[in-house]
Length: 145
Image (cartoon, rainbow, N blue to C red):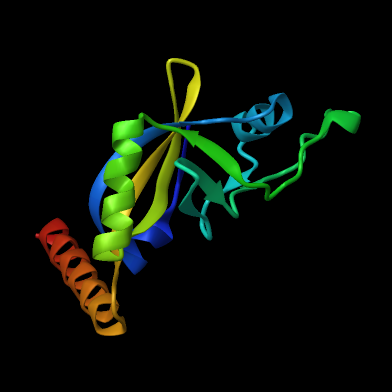
């Protein structure tokens, strides 16, 4: 099961992808396994040498009772110190952004593919839409022949 951030490829140029673990509570992981999660408006920050994911929505687990979690709390990402320093340099010097591209399970652990991204301008977005439409039209014509 994968949860994708389709908006990320539309709004950003992805320069590098880093795999990170994520710290969750018991009801959060159960809710994500049920597919009740959204990373569309989510982004990453580095604070005190640690990486956090902000605005990640994980819905309440219906059997959670009093042990349920806060839906949009900040969640800590698990990375090596060397990787965090590399990310910090990219953010501070180049002005890049940390954007989660997808959530997926690897060996029964939840991982997040964190993209180091540069924002697109409006004309870049229009151009990528035009290229996508051209590819779709060509594929459609080839299918008909």
